Image (cartoon, rainbow, N blue to C red; front, side):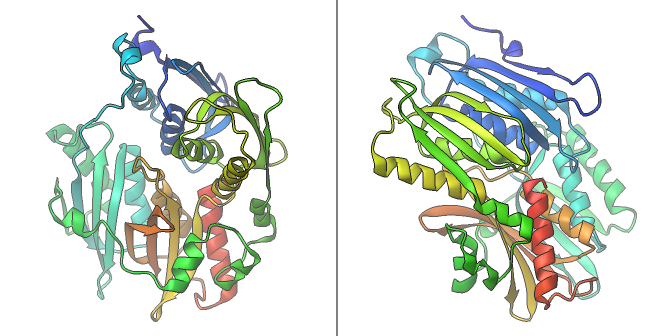
Length: 420
């Protein structure tokens, strides 16, 4: 009664270096499926060069041309296919009769705890191992002791659902040993207990920092805590046009925006959270640093967007999510210097993939040690945010009290996050 599950996802690799790989998804449709697929593609360190999406509300067909990002040297293609296939709804008749979301049990959370001498880049090297093994970092608590040793707590889940097996645990420990070396004092893995809930939130933010971090509109006042470099000001420019003249049943959204590695995900994430249906979408290739998208959409009730107030609200929301999907600032935390990164959480509860990976990679490239780090959730403006906090070690090549140095750090971190 449909395609076999093995054929729901096909991956055709490029014939030569630099040629895009083609991912085809052909399966029953469900709300937000395109967003979920882009989330996984982004999680595997892939950049969507172009894409086509079409659905009749029952069956969908999607094609994505992807290339590995320079910061992601390893792509596990068989694992990517398995992860994408796990998203595809059942192809049986019962799917059409009862299009209800499945309640899958939550993956168990494990606590990875290690204690070892600190060094520059250690946190990123461990993060890279976890990402390559398809282990998702849910929470982190990193503390540096006065004698130069580090105690790291990683709360992780296994996308392969195999971390309960001795073979999987042994493989993880072997990979970590190669990174931590013989100087590692202890490294332990176990199921997380009540301490996971204790680390779910984050310590309080000052009103000034919270306002800067969660401000919905990019403004000229952004120079209060950091400034945009000249070419980063392009992030303030986007054009969204609503057209109801080309289709009797759908509203056409025409989007022109500066390109970044998560652009398609950010657009589909926004439409998913707004309960907007996509009948057809085309994501054109990069042209001089910009992208053009055409999306034929409907409201949840199947109607077009004809109310000017709803049109303006949707356009404004899309611009914010496209232009400013991640917030990056540096602020004082007592006598210390703190880097903060925040991104909105999907209504489904999913966080953004690879943020911790990208930030630690940027800091490693800058030669900056991380004195402490934590990840938590924070509610502001009726939204939930994932917030990453890094206390930076003063013993680095930057004068952290300098506005110029802070701007350079913020600029480098933001570029890494955006894929520039």
